[in-house]
Image (cartoon, rainbow, N blue to C red; front, side, top):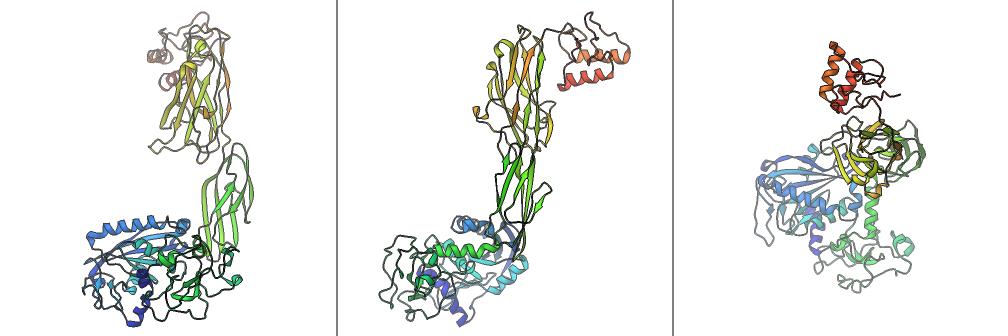
Amino acid sequence: MSQNVAFIVVLSVLLILVGGPCAFGGPGDGTILGATKVVDHGPDNERWTLVVVAEGFTADQQARFDFLVTQLIEDLFVFPPFDTLQPTINIWRFNVASNDSGADMNPGCSLPESYVNTYFNGSFCNAEIERLVIVDDWLVYDALDAAIPYWDQAVVLVNSNVYGGSGGGISVVSVTSGWQSTVIHELGHSAFGLADEYEYWAGCGIDTEQDYHPAYEPSAPNVTIETVRELIKWNDLILPETPIPTTTVYNCEQCDSRSNYFPQRTVGLFEGADYYHCSCYRPEFFCMMRDQTPFFCAVCSEAALASFAPYMPPAFVATPRNAPLALTTTFTYNSPLPANQWFWNFGDGDSVATQSPTHSYGPGAYDITLRVTTNWGDRVVVEEDYIEVWADTLVAPELEVEPNTAGYWELIGTNAIPLHEIVIPITMTNVMNLFFLDSISVVGTRAAGFESNQAVFDNKFSGQLAVRLRADAGGGSPPLPPGHGPVARVHFRVRPFAVPGDTSYISTPPLSTYSLKHIGNAAVFQPVWQGATLRVIPPCPCAHQGDLDGSGAIDAVDLALEIDIVFFGGADIQDPSCPATRADFNADSTADAVDLAFLIDHVFFGGNPPADPCP
């Protein structure tokens, strides 16, 4: 760590010796605007909760404070090991509007004495050290305790371009150049229990009694006076070929100004640490805890992970997680959070109390719940639809059609998990001679509520068509629930010159042909497909069935005639060679209200065509 930052950290101790700050301000000089949780990884009492506090920001400067907090979060969570520790951390933003901007400058330093009215009484030049900026800690404690029931650490951002800060339970940092690194360094102390690794107190060239460390072992995990390899705290990280000590100081009356001649990130025993030139050692030559190097040394990183283990949420993995028909999976507890007991609920009515169970599943989507018992109480994690056995099938029934007629092939789908998206690629054979492939629709099917029906491949003249059906295309429609029934209709027209006995076969090509997906909640899979044959049969002599006016189409005019026949005694039409009259839509030998209902469904809702009355 730089000499400037050293002032910020260590000289806060001097303030205790010389008394409190001589500065103006207090709660009467501002207003608490409120606390906002900006990073939420769970209950505050189960996570390490950091509060970022505004000091010396006026009401008009709150937007800048909000931006600084966002900037700190972004920088913090890309800095190892905070990137790994992110799930353990909650962050609150504490907006406080001071009457004035900045902080006091006490007398005795190079900058002129000045005073402003701020809520937490922030001030520079404490103990006649200009960079030592502090606030009234008790005001901060009282304000945070009243607003946020569970918090672990506060960082007060002071709105000043004068470089400064201080450490402790309440860390204080002025928002000048490099302030984010200073915050991270301070968190190394307060969150991880790390010591400073630099070899001076007030600064190199200033110290007079920092030559030799006293003969006691520091409690912090990253500094030591031990030189016996086997007894060094971090011996497990030192390679056998690394000498111990790794570097020594030639002149213990001065800071060591030599460059590092070992490869960077070498773990060893480097002399100069814990504010002393000699007789105390640090794990690596460079570290965030020494000189604001943009990384923590390996020992500090391990200490961070160990310190935050109690805040880790429970977590698990399962292998495998999905399958088409049946699945046996193994669950493994996968969290640094130390647990004493494990209780699993598999989502299908079964449960077990063991650390790494194995469980078998049939078709369906299953929520997994894990409750663990720790020294800090019970913790629970729930993963929704974590296991999926889709057992998805798509079936096309056999069809018989007549020349010069239109119809559709209804695709019957069975799904055991909710489907948000379905891609249906269709290939029909013998198209040029037999059929014209028209479209794929969801009218009258289980997927009728899907918001999007998009053709993603279209070569209908060769019998190939692919559509993408999406339940929610921006409107919030629910997925297709588990069930069985039609999910799509493949519409076609039989060519007039089709010959009875000709056949076509409907199938689905591999999805990779079109680079498409069939998507459930988490898995991407291809359903089990059962194709079918379409056969041309001789025209029925009753081709006018349902076409009461003989127009060649079944429409609203025929519906009106049907109503007249069923309810008002209108004359039905009997073709000499047909066993059923034209108004007998379902060919059950009686023209009645049931036929009228079928006719309405066919004309207005795309329902089934008239029944074939031919023997």
